[in-house]
Every structure is written in structure tokens, then in C-alpha cells.
Image: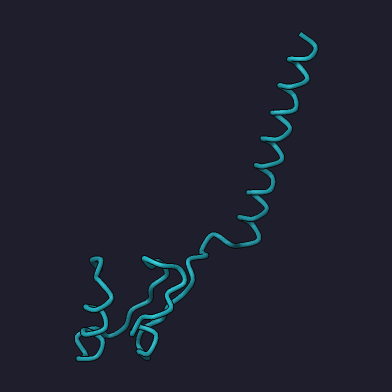
Length: 80
């Protein structure tokens, strides 16, 4: 589906030319004042697809690896 602006989605949804829509990226997060929130065939979800246990563990592991690499470089500079 092509990218649409909220007013177009709202109109399309109300007149029945759009069966349903699911959105998770918004110009302003979270979407507060939008007529899309009132439509039964539109699902609004926060943009958090990457917030899984696996992805958070990966982020933590990467941060630790980067910190350890930084500390190793610091120790080598002191020894050199």
C-alpha cells in the first residue's frame, strides 16, 4: 500500500473504500489528536516492533562488547 496521509485514510475508511488499516509509524509519537483513533477498522500501534526480549538482549550484549573494547583500548594506551 502506498503511503497515505491521515485525512485520506480517515475519508477512505469512512466511505468504505478502505477495508482496514494498521499503522505503527506516525509523524508525532504517540498519535494523540487524530480522527483515526475513532475508526473501528483502523488499528494504531506504538512504533515498538524492535522491543522484543531477543532484541533488547542483543542491544545489551552489543553495548557490553563496545564498552569492553573501549576499556581494552584504554588499557593498551596506558601500557604503551
